[in-house]
Image (tube, rainbow, N blue to C red; front, side, top):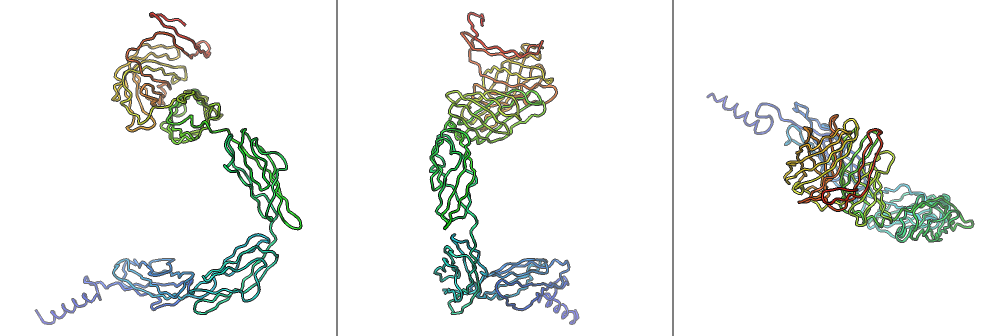
Length: 570
């Protein structure tokens, strides 16, 4: 090999090693910052920085970082603005670093020195109000203490003084006693003996007229001490102490007389709303100020019986809404303190079917055990049996449905498919696809594994009776269910119908059809577990509802059913 070629190769290797060019023959990226040398700025100032790159073929630019105090703003791939702190106690140095996006090992830095400037950050003070407590803070920055403060010219308004302070802030406080503007010069001296001054002023204004600050009162509850120890009315402006009175109307029954200090207290005895006017008089001299305001206080019925409804409850209601036949079934948890903390509901009418709607709500039970509850946009009235395990429920609003039904306490959860086992009898009532009266009753055998293995059903569709149809089906309850909701299918007369149901206990289920086609009916009712060896004997109470086909006219019957020796009498 010629000697000159060897020298050339060595030279090229040296260039790559020095980083003056890439080994592929491309020139390396360089970064130049402007400004390029150390910059000095004062606290609170900013510094713009730009980056110029060579050999950045894709124009990717740089990213920016700051080491030390302050922040970066307006960042781009070729520029940034450094924002120094508003206040410092001593000079400090920060470093701004630009890093190539294309080759992160290539960086450039700029050093910035930020000088602390001994000065005031407070340039004005808030106005004061005659005879009302005042507080204003004066602050200096840019040096170290201990500090010494003094008013060197002028005076503070009468009634105001400087606090004792050796820190960078001092408090002006007190109660001004003279109207007008007071100008003064405040001086602060740092630990090095450097003193600075600032001209300030405080204006003392006439106070606004006396008024009643309380605009509304919290509700009370029958039988419960109002707000515990009572509620005190509040004044705005004026000169304390104040004197309160009622000039018209009165507090609700059971309340004490309004105290001169404005305290409303007592134990309400009657539900309702009372209107009254309060008057306040202050201690201004030479002439006292007076003001009045109209207030109302509402006392709610006692919630002492809310504990009667506590635990998991299932419900089933049926009736009519604006679309036709309506039914709903569900479950909720009542916490005993007037809250339905969780709930699930299914509903069905000719216009819509809703399944597994989650809700929360509230309820209130008065001293007569009559209650109201609100959930899912509906309001219901209900009454409970003395033991609280069962009741009747009726929708009680003007925008929902006219529906009523049962409210039953559920057995302890979790619920399961295996709870539903052995033979069950049932009766479902509702409307067919044309809106005509429809009902069926029967029995099904449940195997505890999700199958209705056999059964028989009698149906009556607007007078068309089909007796003793064979029936089968399926059912399931999600593992670990806490609300008892399950789904089921029942097939009879070659028609499959679909349901949601809620477990009251292993012996009782509340069923509601969730089909919504032009072929299937909308029915609901109870399914009850049969005895092992069922018999019908003795005296029973019965109830029937029906429509007279000639009318149709609603018909209802209640009575006693006596069975003995295979015969019936009513």
